[in-house]
Image (cartoon, rainbow, N blue to C red; front, side):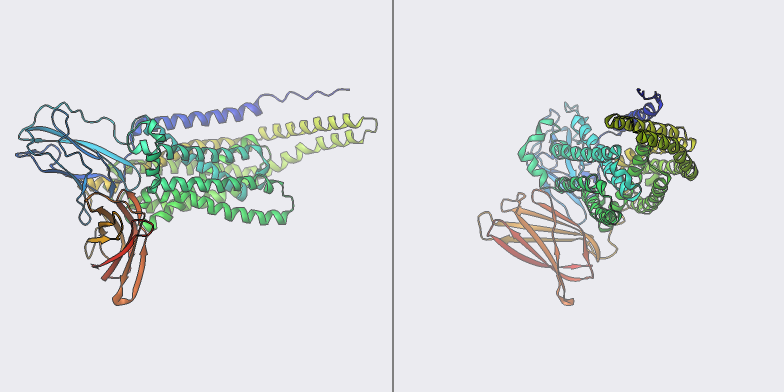
Length: 640
């Protein structure tokens, strides 16, 4: 007696493969089009003016060229270069001098004396406070315009092959985050049985691997991405050390450390948790995993919030937690959608209860997305003209339209989910009656060899699973749900790509300010910017210098604080430690500690420094120049 497994047909296998191939092709197409059409990433800071102005003709050679920016930037050697008509350096080839005053960010370079008449080219490159490289070029003429051999650079900062790879890593990092967090949340909140499903395990692990690999690539490419644009500089140890001292570098390292904790979470979720059978113990473990996983996911999301758009501009102290909530909601919705798609196509065991639970999670995520998105839109756009007249605003309109389409498709999915309940139960009952009786007859036959009986039992189990899957695949309600979820996932891929583009595009509010449009909402209503100079001497070697402090807008509430340290030679000076404290002695308030972040050599900044009330504030500055040489200096300033 022999048994031959029936031919089940190609459809159960081909359909999930076709769906996966379709999504893969869509992802590749969308990302390719976006990367091809987006160009180099714009940034939060923008050039707002120059002296001489672009295209100006001056009678006599200026002593220096100055550039003004909308927000704080980090500069280094060769950040501003002035080239004569023959292409030779017309500046003194030194690091740009910081000429900032109050809320005006300005840098300049000195020019050689006795420059001849002709057209001069100014090329500049810097790093915006929200981590994006910016660059540009313009010309001015002395006496009269002339021919010039200098070609304006066609590649902006952050462009070229390095920029393309870095942007791909940025897209991949967001995608990996969505799959990692959304997939894990789907298992814990919607379908606990998914912890034992191999396709679900692969989805979450691949999300972790993608995010980890993308973060490593971004960390290594950060130096050439913001500098030379050469892949070889990715392994320059001095450049890597400089990156680690910046806010974006620290955020990437923090993300890698949190991903180590995420790996432990995945091991428990798909190991101990998946094998746990006692319901009470599993409930306790679910709570522990939810809390621990939530903390890790929040920390990973914060690495974006603390290093990109949310960390600069107005109301940064509110914008960063709002950005974290926005990212977590995106992951719960889109990552859960990807998990549902995999479950429907690759696992026959998911039931309607899990689909309904995800529907509730998705609804809550959409509510959070709407609330946080409205705030972010106001903060980054600021006016109706910026919404329709800037690239950021236009991308935002496209994002809203895609969300509307996604919600419309989701409505159809909810209808299919409602129909799935009864048909799923019926198909379950029909698929289990006959195989169960056949299995009992095999086990009851006393003449069968035990080994042969076990073999037949395995064949019967395989036959049962095949029949059950065939019945479920033929279920019109389940098929309709699969199609609608696949359509949701396709729209979600495009939505995620557009969202990623928004994070690297110059906000509409800043673009309008740079073009002379709507004034910034952070302009002070009372008081004014505070500028202080404080000499110091720690008593050690190279212990003398000057601390310069700018507090903007210099009024009660949230302020941006910038600190520059110049050595005795007038050049930027790095120190191992810098701390500040603010005290209003007349009201017995303080000291209020401030720990600024290092932006560049000799330049630190802190956002959202809160000044609770107006008055004559004492500003204490502690400077440490070595392990033992330290001094605290102070100066009073009227704020508000």
